[in-house]
Length: 348
Image (cartoon, rainbow, N blue to C red; front, side, top):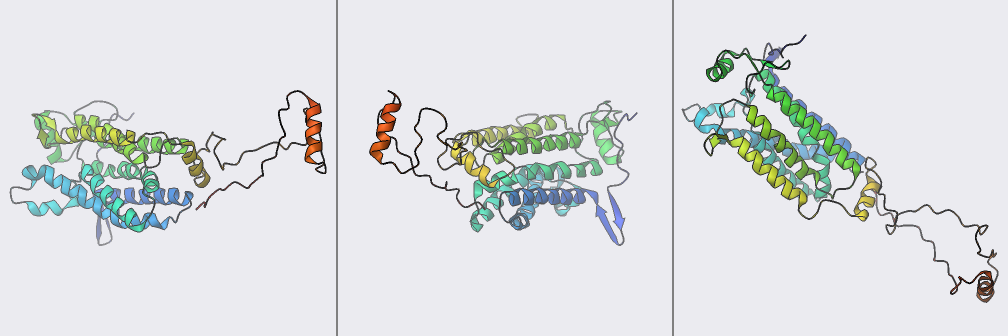
């Protein structure tokens, strides 16, 4: 039986004259998966999926720059202040701070969406599940770099570390330890679960537009809190011995919850009906009283009840007289409302 997760034999491979670093490859695969999901969701909403590809050309570079800037800013004193500042540009060696990437990606994404005149709340909902999908795949780059693991453990899924530098740093804190919590795997699985939850919420069609993005922010950093408590890598600390990323995660959960609840969470029946008309993956509204929504009505052939059968040739006086004779409930003449075709709007 498997007693632990073995370490990878190498962090890269050769492809002809090229050396492919698996860390970068995992990030690239994560981006491709996010773009694929975003294109499918945007196309299902009746819009041109090419907009996702255009958006990615701006958001992905901004996110990578943001992740590296966050890492360098929070670890500058430990990693680069001794004259090794050129190493700050070697992203293939690891060191990408996800919070910085989220901030930069969201800011640039909002700017580009508004610049193109696209519906911002709709795009926030479309893109929200795509981000944790990219993170779930990209986290496996940490496995191949043998980095960012957690405290020692002997659980069956414990991670073996055989990289001399990483192992020596860990054993300085925990002598004799060779297997550790695979925090990269924990975070990856958490992100997969977050993708599924966001898709399920979207399908239920009960939240207001634009609420999936703050749900992602709150959900991701909630998982990041307990992952940070497991990690043992050297990191910036505040308030004594608290990891900076843990404190930031707590703050982001609070911000995400406030953002999520701001202005109310549940959508109106009108909004749910309009969304169901153009997004086939969501449930239709259960409110049939919405003005303009199609309602199935059984045809009245006059064969049942106490209503008199007329062929349309009688005068209004004759119809009224027949109704008066049919029972005491009659309290005035009845008129038929004109039947109009419901206005369904432009479904794109």
